[in-house]
Image 1 (cartoon, rainbow, N blue to C red):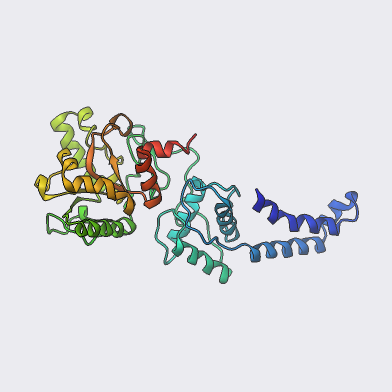
Image 2 (image 1 turned 180 degrees about the horizontal axis):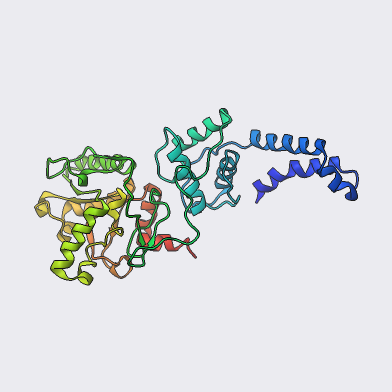
Length: 342
């Protein structure tokens, strides 16, 4: 708590200076002069606190996280000054990004978010916490099926599965069509992804092309209502329990996040089949996707953890840092998140 001590220290010094004895402490704290000194100390802290020059995301732990929390507190938030990038900070960053003009909404502290925060300091502006994204309730909401509802659906590291569902009315605000090949020409919702994921997919496909391979994007964003139709059809044909091994219940699909894309190739007739994992394109995708921030979300042999069958075609955007870590460790996204929930 080095930063917290540094912030408190000037105030403590001022208290000692203005108090000739312990008995007169209360009298001095009520005085106009003392209150003026406190105001001066607060002004000093604000002048000395600046947004950190670092890329930070959920689960990071260092003094830059503490600096970020202190900076956000100066514009209106009330965050505990620990050095861990927790859910509370993720919410605050997301809320700030939603209320800002030029920052991507991700819950991640990046260069654009830093510049926006600096502008608040320069213009001496304050923010209304929760105006962009309501603070998650202390007791999480649950779906009719009893699944916990994600409090911050904009979080690029949000875990969405059979235990954590997206709000029924969640529609990403930054959806766009990535400039990559599709096996169809219609302007369908499944062409869309969230902005950061879409640009990363473009870079991924460009790299595949440089390697002499041709990938096709088959299915990206899918709304809650569309997932109702998809799951109902699968459940009618295969039974609900078996359908739920390869098809998500409404709200529990990663496609609703706008951060997932199903990828295929001509070698498997542009279908989404496990054989894709044995193709040259499938092997290249598994090896290179992390370099662009994607993971194979439902890997082989991890069905008991993910709850779904092996899907070598389904990639999920989580950012380069997390994607490389998950892939190098050979773990699932569930196992990655679980490390920090202990």
